[in-house]
Amino acid sequence: MAKRKKRPDPFAFHQASEDLGREKRKARDLRNTQWWKRQCDRGRCHYCGRPTPPGELTMDHIVPLARGGLSTRGNVVPCCKDCNTNKKQLLPMEWERYLTGFKQEDGPAGE
View (tube, one colour):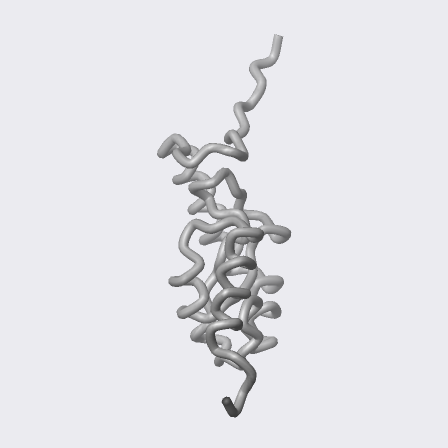
């Protein structure tokens, strides 16, 4: 009987180092693809929408690797360094709450 490949637990906070290492290698490989270069050429942060030079965009995992995310096209987006740093290991719904609170503190422009 063939041995089944163990998939990371999507709800885990702590993944095995071999799983993290494999996903980080896949992310490095993905960074060198034409698909990723086209994503960055748009020059916009996925989260805040600010125009950002393509060379300054970073790869962010929507579902972080440490939370069970994978390095796939559907789980990585280009974002500015500020958003990537502030997002840390938050899941999309946690990050949305953070952004909403941030926008409410700022208030409408001009006030």
